[in-house]
Image 1 (cartoon, helix red, strand yellow):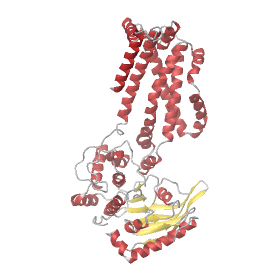
Image 2 (image 1 turned 60 degrees about the vertical axis):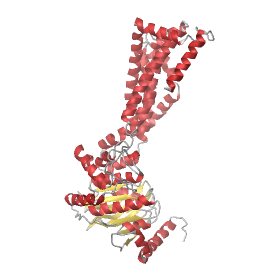
Image 3 (image 1 turned 90 degrees about the horizontal axis):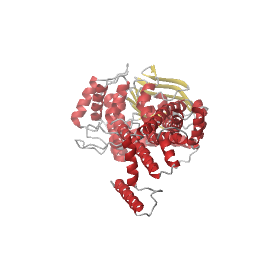
Length: 259
Length: 293
């Protein structure tokens, strides 16, 4: 079953055409990665799906219904922390529920459960500036998942984290979203990360007027282990194929790419 | 404590210099003399009418300035055509020393309360206008996007993002605005009035009464500082999140930034997901194994 269906999507800022004819299907409950040259419009695509950028043309459907701005069922996790600094971790997690009309006391109890689920039990009373980068990411994840989205959009969620925190968080996020059966579309610059976490990897073409150039199925079963994957010839072959595509698109943007 | 100590040392040195004849008591009367004048002003009760007049003028100007300046700042930030209209005017008023308008206000509004309130209002309104205007303009777009993607409408945005963001700018500028409110009131009284601390200052200056002048200056400083401290306390209360400290938390912390959830929590999590499938209608969500990855 297809959860997210994007058909001939076009987005432009003024006269500048960012996306031109983007078509992509994301099966329900799957994790799909989106890679592409910097500035090609990956984030714009996520923002359009989340309803933050109005599409110029095309169709966006979630479970067969048109996606509307702020629609229940779509959650987004940005690259940078977007927690309200004047709210505690539990108040931040409860925010989405309160916006949806859940009583404050119930929303806070739910927030505590979610903080426990992301491994932050006992940190509910902390303000964001008292938390580390990884902890803030976990709070943001709990905030989004607490609203029980059917589709989760991740915009480079593991960027700016050190290697150990990134690996732990990748494993936890994957575990949580697959446990919840949430459909995920994830933008990343890290090809290894894309292959490690995703069931499909879509390569976007160079901008302007970017589209989906090719989609690669990732044939490795879960659970995946990066060290084990690196030893498998098929992993290197797949990375090589995606990288060849990506390099061509990067070169089309006028940048020199070393061999 | 160091500040109080430094002030006491300064006052003691001044007292000694005046008593030893190093400085003329007519030019710089000793602090003890200033204290006696202050005590006399309060003891006789003559000062209260003047203090009340200045306080009323300053507070009226402060309240009106915050209200009008705040509303104009908010409107200009949200309506670009209005910003184009207001920004040059406010910029000009901000650039020139606004107290030069005091004589004009006396001509327009007379020597009564209105001219002092008008000057005080103008000084405060321009300051607050720029604070609110910048506050709304500088709002973190990521927070706006976050609330919108969580389904928040304009009301949620105002409550959760706009108001707290603008408060940071507003409270910061209010401490300056309090000083401006008193400047407007006292300068207005100084130019033309029949009562108020500025009027008394003008009288003291015209009679070369340095002790009375210093006593009145001390009084204005004390009142302004008191209100300044009150606003600072309000700021600390409103922004208590900025001053929050970590509290000891039970459990082991995990390098990934959280606590090891453990098998029991995972099992509870699976049960919970089974009972609460993702809310979007029409989608089949089958909880999967949590041992992956």
